[in-house]
Length: 97
Image (cartoon, rainbow, N blue to C red):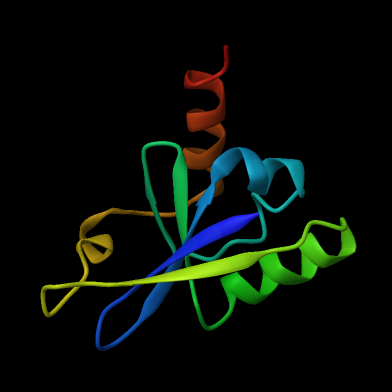
């Protein structure tokens, strides 16, 4: 599975579908330092990305990464809503088909 890493001079985040987090039972394992927008979580690089990588490895899901560097001084990810398990669950319910 290919994931985008969005970075700016101070930090980086992996763009991950909330459905994948749910599939890996990680909705309650992601910190407030990550962000959300639409059906995606943007996992902060220092801790939450490692949680995802470990769970994906255990599930046999190979991950690859593509880096996208913000053109501005700060990435727009910093303006997204903070991640909470409740918001993630609401996105799953609202986007279910």
